[in-house]
Each structure stands twice: as structure tokens, then as C-alpha cells.
Image 1: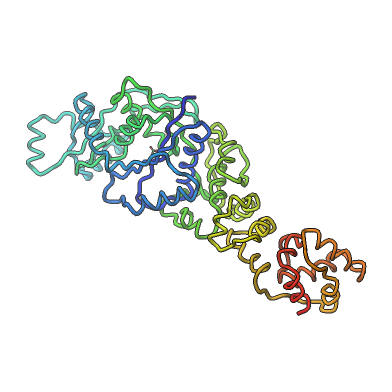
Image 2: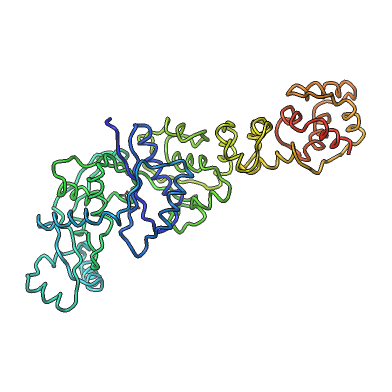
Length: 447
Ligand code: GLU
């Protein structure tokens, strides 16, 4: 395949959620596996609802996931391109002005339904004469503009859904330009896809119907160029079957991040749910990209359970090496020669990244040691070897203690864990003990 060019095209009208992350990741992973380019395009022609704050927040959310676009565009800055595309359609007789009010259209739809006809726009505006239009405009009406669809079936080979087709007889001529002159999403999207040389449009299956219209627009605007290849993926739905919307605040990337879920866990869940691959933890987006294949995406809805994010975060953390997290640890002030061994010791025993601070306190700070068996602990303290300590010290010490006391297994180890860490469970003590050091260990054992 020649290098693909893909785009993620959110409207900056809200924060993005895990379902939007799925679209972004599919595009990103597809471009990464095929050495392509990933464009971030803000579909912000709806001036009333789009904001610059949301656009910036989306960039932050994508960066958190590990997605840095090669290029970023805003449709609001590219209106001249859409005006030129609209002019081309007008010249070709494919864009026509309509003056119906929403109420008039609704009335007509009801009449069609009453007669058992499909509620398709009847193209009444095509019959208006120049004089009719002048009269309507003199009444103060402003036109909206519809794209005249060609009759017939539009076909394409969908990378996920396979051979696909839509009969345009069932579709109304879509409105491309609103009464106030602003563009709806359909035309700018195609004009941009042509201009940006987009090779693959990967998006949710809620856009399948748009594809028929957009393929007709591609043919009208760039008849000499092949249109992009389309891939429509299943949508994430909640455990009880409900769809996600930008209003599903708890599943916004921002709130998932605030709850302490790892970006890689969110990415793995968003990508692998609803595919033939098991949902599993990954160390990097590169790892996720290596096994990513659009052919693995199922045609059934992608049902997911946000509760899985806890376990997935725990498993993700366990996979991360010190170099993966060095900067994040430094941001928590976990630095110095103990930072790396502490991370290695504790990464399998934390549920969120910040839990590392608990284990930092165990090795470097003050804890409430639990001393359940003071006589045994006093004996343990007496046998504590001199420093220097390493990862073998624990085995040597507890070996001596076993010989001296006859204890073994849990009765030998558990009181030591409680005294040394204040916790019922946690990282291997062989790894923690040298980090705690003799002075602290002695104080915790002896009280
Ligand atoms: N702005 C559109 C959306 O957010 C983009 C759809 C597309 O990828 O073409 O749904």
C-alpha cells in the first residue's frame, strides 16, 4: 500500500469520550502500521456550537492517549475552499436553492407518511422560476442549498463491512448550505478529503448513509481522482446496550484520566473491544499497532464495560518499564537512586499510577507499622544482618529466622510484612527490604 493519509475529524462542540477515542485510535493505528500520515481536522463550521476551548481540550486528550497529529486543520479557516466547491456544484446544476421553512417541510413529510410514501424531499424547489425566487427573497426568505443526488445505487467496498451499497432513491437531496450561508458538515468534509488527499476514511458506522452522498460529491468535485477507501466500524455501546454521546460525561477522556485510569488501558479497551482480538494490556501504542488490523473488527456492536478499566490499568502498569515512566515519576518527585528499583518492585502491586507514592512512603517515609507478635519481631530484629543489603538479604535473614524459631510459611513471613510495610500484602519483600534499609527496618520491628 502507498502511504495512507487519514483524518480524525471531531466537531469541537464538547469533550471527547472513549467512543471518539476509538475512531481516533483506529485512524492513528492504521496510519502508524502503514507508515502513513494522521491529520487532525476540526469540523467547526457550526460556529454556534464549536469553541476553541473544546478544540484545545481535544488536542490535550489526544496527546494524553499518545496521538500527536502530523498536521492540524480547522474548517473555519478554509471556507474559501468550500465556497469554490459550492460554485462548482452550482455550475454543474447540482446545487439548488430551497426556501421551505422547517414547518413547511415537516407538514409535507407528514402528508407523505399519511399516504404511505417515504419521507423524501420532493424537490419542489427545483420547479421554482427566477421570478418565484425573487418573490420569495423579497418576502425576506433566504435560501438553503440542496445537493441534487443522481438516481441509482451507490456501491463501495468497505474495508470492514465488505461490499456495501445504498439506493439514493431512498434519500432526500441533502442540505449542504444553511440559510445563514454556513456549511453543514457534508460538503466541507469532501472538499477537505480531496484537498488533503485523504486515502482512507475510517469512521463509525453511523456515517454509512453519508457515504452514499459523499461518494456522489467526490464524483462531482473530483471526477478524475479515485475517492478514498471507506471503513465503517462498529460503535462502542455500554454494558446495557446504551450508545455513548458527548454528554456521557463519565466516559470522557478527561474524567477517565482524572479517575487515574492509564491512557494505554483506555486505548486498549477502546481499540480491542468489538474485535476478534482479546482485550489485553499493552506497553505502548506501538504494541497495539503491531496487532491492529481492520479485518479483525467485528460487525456486531462493541459492548464494553468501563469497570474493565481498573484491571486493565493495573495490568498496564505492571508492563511498564522504568524508562517508560521516568518523567511521570519525577513529576511526583519520585527521583534518585531508589526510583528505579522502587518502580520495578511495586509496579505489579499498584492500581493507579499515584499508588506508587504509598510504596515510596513505605521505603522512605513514616508508616504505621503493625506489630502483632512483638517477641517474634524482637528476635527478627536481633538477627537482622549488617548492611550492605541486596536482593538476597531477605532470603538469608528469613532463613536464619526460620532456623532460630522453627516458624515457616505465613507465620514466618506475614508478621514481618505487617511490621515492615504496615500492609497486608504488597510487593516482594526481597525487593523492598534493601530499599527500606536497616535503620528503618529495625525501628519498625522493635517499635
Ligand atoms: N465531524 C464528523 C463527526 O464528528 C466527522 C465524520 C467523518 O469522519 O467524516 O462525526
